[in-house]
Length: 343
Image 1 (cartoon, rainbow, N blue to C red):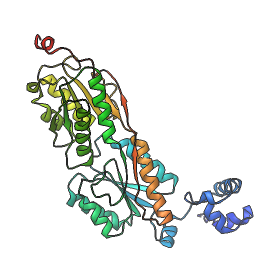
Image 2 (image 1 turned 30 degrees about the horizontal axis):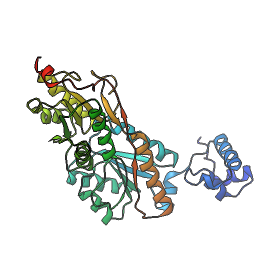
Image 3 (image 1 turned 90 degrees about the vertical axis):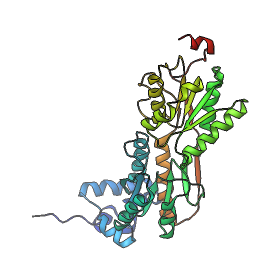
Image 4 (image 1 turned 180 degrees about the horizontal axis):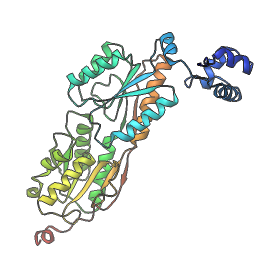
């Protein structure tokens, strides 16, 4: 025989408050509206009675599913684990759950994923997939779907975003390399169709110009180790002494290309990455890189989206997080050209 689930009214009677107070106290997004001691008493009573909220009934009543779609361009990229962790943590605290899609970089495929998510009645989207002129953003705006961008932004600034300061990050990388005596510095850029690829490339150029230097730029077709290796393959002929890569995966590809060319890091060529994704401290050599707080980035994106649900505001906000340089073994002082040539 199944025991009937306790109701909000029963909890209200047991705690001596109005049912609406119980409802608010048990809703993570409204709990702050109830006095802390009252909310604690209600939660304890609900737990002792074995109360379980009827999410389906609540979503039908409010016209919400409490589901948020999260689109990633490459779920295998270690950068997105911390971002997703921050998103999931914040959504759970507010009573929402993520539905994650590995949507790739093709806009038609991304739109197809969003159509399926709309069938699941998601309340909004967090997108880590956008390009500079993004078709998916326009598709979502036409349908009035709340969205927040994370890690990448779009050129038209049509929606809110949480990103890192890409210009500052590249300035940190270049300043560090110049302080070690490097002058022949190359940048292996990410795809210039993305904000991270374009802004980091431009930041590299500005940083080099501020030191009176002219940098060498190669563009990787994708943010992958293989693409980084291919883009860096011809750098030996340019006699560069240092490389600032657009991300850590590209930096790992640069290290592959250096080894294939018979060059050592950092003795012959110093390398700086970007992101400080997991395990960059245990690769050989350990990677000097620009650290981005990806988990906090995910938290802030989720918080902004939840706030838009609660307030109904269409205000566009752009949050730019400050990166920091983490110095490890892949960078060292530049040796004179003649000394390198003796090898």
